[in-house]
Structure formats: structure tokens, C-alpha cells
Length: 447
Ligand code: NDP
Image (tube, rainbow, N blue to C red; front, side, top):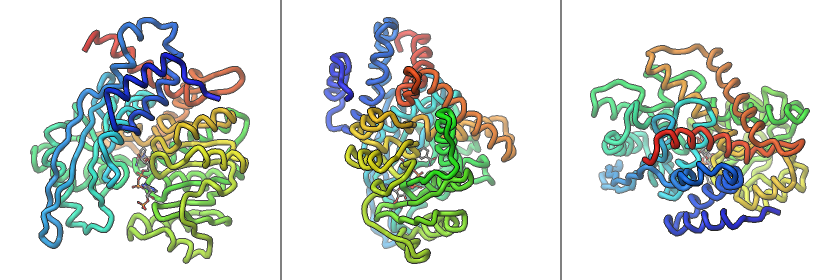
């Protein structure tokens, strides 16, 4: 059983006091602090310089009004945010999320996590996150365009190719990035790499779309191989049916595993025959082009649809790719009971702390999101390099770079997380991500 030390207790109490009403942020900080506090016990310089305390405070957070007009001529008001968390090792970098559940707490948790994740990639990127409580679901293209333009009209003051380079996240895909980049260009009269995830015609990078999902499965494959196992023949339960879930499913299939489930916010489909490339192409058309509900997949291929989440389906591996806190302690217990021996997190913080403790106590292979889903931001970093140099790398070069970065992340986590004959990937990811940012902060003195 995990027991909280006095130092961790004191630290978390302080974070909660300074950030009232922000449960997601508290959760993300606690998960990291539980690994970092023991690590810095015998490293007084990090304690004297209050490095962890400073890392738990964003550099700044801006919120702003976003007004736009719907197709019926009504004026609508949403709230926009950008949390610039830490730029010690490079410009702020992290996605923009459009979803009704977006709050400052959610974006602070995401920005905090992003700082560690970006450090793990080995590329020079700081951490940030932004978004709005705008719900793109059910909106026309013109409504989404007007919203994105209004959002960027304020956001453009806070970002820049050397300052802060946002990307996509939930509810923000190629369409939204296109509208926002177009508005940035119009407002500033500059064509620079200020957003990543752009279309290929205007500075986007090959494989950026696939990178997060592929990377999550490369991380899984690396963990399995390190443990003397492999992907071939594994039964995989995936949640989500968006960008990350789709390419995670594709890579599982390519590596010889069978994907049994995918989901959306209405429920999940269970296809015991496996979701192959042809069925995935249907899923992409259904969810990303027609923006329909996942039940249509079950009707088309004659499999089961259930409300709720897929974690009671027996599997070897779980790959959560939808959203935060989608695996509770009870659901983690159900996965373990049904034989799950590995988890690779495509979504950000998809497992509640009680669930993480259950995985850790059971000693299964558990890759936390900051390591497992870092492939997306890594290729975003490569998109920034290509934009700066005004060149485009070829697909096979980028595929090799992504694979290499995920292998390095795995090995780095394994080095810092080695405990006896096992690897604690959670501690490994937290510590490896911390050290680089902390050492840069030490070099800057008190700032
Ligand atoms: P998408 O918007 O493309 O897809 C999100 C998927 O998750 C959809 O199937 C959606 O269902 C489902 N979903 C969203 N919110 C909920 C909810 N509250 N309950 C149940 N299902 C939900 O997003 P992405 O695939 O880009 O992102 C998924 C996760 O991966 C997020 O945690 C994101 O932060 C993380 N991530 C994404 C990266 C990227 O490159 N895109 C990079 C790193 C992390 P529905 O269609 O019904 O809304």
C-alpha cells in the first residue's frame, strides 16, 4: 500500500491552500511530488532553492472573453485560457483544448504535466496549455471558424514562435488549427511556426497526426520487450475514438495485437473479432469526418455496444486514450482481476490516483501519460525545427526519429525507475523529466 510521507503531506497541503477548488491540478502535482520528494531527500540544493515549489507555480495564466456570433445571429460568450507553466528549457509548448469541461484547474494540471513530458522528449520545449469551455460538437464549420478567429484575436498577444507555440488537443484538430493559424497570420502579417499540427500545405509536419497514438504503442512495445515479452497476439482494450485512439489502434494492429474496444462519450463498442485497418478507416470517417456516434460502428459490423467505459472487458493491455480520470480505482481493480498485465496511457492523466496505486501495487507494467504520449509533442518539436529551417523532412526520417525518441524516453525512465529487478516507470518518468528542468532553473538563480 502507498503511504504518504510527512514531507509529501506538507507539500500537498500547501499546494491545495494556494490553489483552492482545483482538484485536477492537486492530483497532478501529488502524483509527481510522490516520486520527486523521496528523490531530492539527499539532494539539498533542490530543496534549498525550492525547485519543486517553484515548478508547481505557473509562470502566468491568462483568461479572456471570447465573443462570437452563431448561425442564428445570437451573440455567444465563452472563456479562453492560456497557462504558460514553465519555459526553463524552451518556449512554452502544449495543446489547446475545446471542451465544456475545460477549467483553469484542468489546464493547470495539463500545463504542469506538459513541462515534465516535454523535458522527457529531449527537445528544447517548455510546458504550457490552453483552451476554452467552447463545445465544437453540433456547431457548423462557420461557427467553429468564427469562434477560432475570436479566440486567436486575443491569444495572438501572448504567443509567438520563440515565446509559446500551441498545438491541438481534445476538440482541436486540423480544422481548428487551420482557422487559428489563418487568423494569426492575418493579425500579425507574419508566416511563422507559431502553431503545430498545421496542414501539410502550410508548414505542417508529416506523421504529426499519427505521432501521439503511434508513440503510445511504441512505449508499450518497448516496455513489453524490456520485460522479455512482445505485442504479438496481445488483446488490447482502447478507450476513445479520436486522434490518439485511432492511431494507437492502428499501430497495435500493425504490430500483431488485437484491438477489442474503442469508445466515445456515449459508450463503447466491443468487437471480439478485432478492429482491423478496414474497420478503422470506417471509424475515422464516422468519428472524424461525419462526427457521428460510435454505436453506428456496432450496427455496421454486428458487434456489441454498451454505455459506460470498456474496463470490464478482459484484456492483456489497457490503452486509455479519451480523457482524464477515466479509470477509477475500481476499474483498475477490474482490469487487474481480468488479467491485464500492462497499461500505456495515451490520454493525459486518465487514471485516478487510487487506480495508479492499484497498478503499482500489483507490479504490472504501467507507462504514465507524460512518457507514453510524449510522441505527439516530440513531433511537434520536430515541426518547429522544420519551420525554423524552412524545410520538410521525409516520412521515413520522421518515423525513425519518433521511434528513436520513444526508445530514449523508455530507456531514460528505465534508468531512473529501476527498483530491484523491476522498473517503476512512473517514478522514472517523473524523475527523468524533473532533473533537466530543475538543473536549468538552478542555473538561472532565483527567477
Ligand atoms: P479527440 O478530441 O480527437 O478525441 C477525444 C476522444 O475522447 C473522443 O472519442 C471523445 O468522445 C472522447 N472523450 C472526450 N472527453 C470525454 C469524456 N469526458 N468522457 C468520455 N469520452 C470522452 O482528442 P485527442 O485524441 O487528441 O485526445 C485524447 C487524449 O489524449 C486527451 O487526454 C489529450 O489531452 C491527450 N493527448 C492528445 C495529444 C494529441 O496529439 N492530440 C497529445 C498528447 C495527449 P466524443 O467524440 O464523444 O467527444
